[in-house]
Length: 464
Image (cartoon, rainbow, N blue to C red; front, top):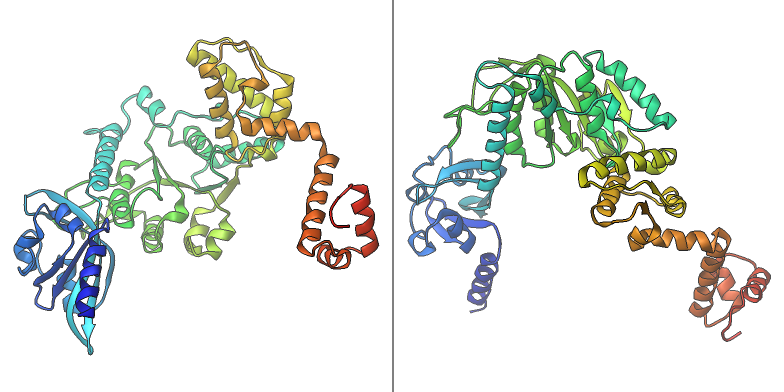
């Protein structure tokens, strides 16, 4: 009775999952099928349970079905992409994790958890098709100057700043652009990594060839592999002849952002491509020669990425021939007035405004603000202000509340801020020990006499 109650509750829980769950016995007969699975496949569970798996999925075979493969091999399969036709004839793509079910050492069935990635797959294919039309057309890579500017529009002239770090980095980037070496760019989000990437491409001999950017964190591993290397019709269920980004970028530059988010098994394939200068489409046995310059980027330090095994060391050293670390905006504060003026001019033209300057009080706040979002945060702030203000000068009233706190702290002064923090810490320690001076001094790790002096100086009241 208890087991029946437990089973019924498990079934209810599984129906709330936003992944499809299927269980088959050792003969491939479906014994469980949750609500989300029937939504993916477009068929009621009553018509599924008790039937043979391939009767429900006629486009699969005993070789392409992840569930039947697990029953046959006894080995689990993790995050395997599978494309099939559902009962309505619709092409569906799922990301499957399939696990054998064993009892007393024998395989009695298998369970599969499926995530529907059909929309993501279609979107990625549309992106690749669009890139194909943009980059290679029928015969040529880039047809005209306008196409080239659309693909990689930034040059070194667009890098704004007089900070010494920026000037030094730009000088190194220009020299790297004049060669064909791999470049890796580090820096926090919003520092302007892709601006440098595009500038390097446009300053190189590859400037009249494709520039393609791909964020490696945006897609699952199986989709990313097909997007990078292409797919061959018949290579797997639902596969079509489609060039990958390496083919589309042939002769040009491929920018791989957040390279540390690429799965390690795919990193090994990328390393082989870089070494051999050949790619093999997914599902194909033929190789294709490619001539592509790789520029990569990470938003964490290379040391951290390698320590946390987010990037293979051999791949890192292959990509990191030249390394550019773009500084945070908080580390180049002398550029803030220049950047602010540049963005005001930019959005004046966009919104038809005539903002002439920034109030000195606002500029002081800008120079003391943390800018966690870096240059991008400054740009978006000024864009937001100019989109709604009708004044000619940006004043403190135009700033968001979090930035006005900076002004409050400035007016308080550093000594007053520190004194307030000290008073709070001492009061907390005294309350922790019911105002026992000796115990509170031990917690604060200061002499008892020093604590008594500070209590008097800071005018701390209580049970003293």
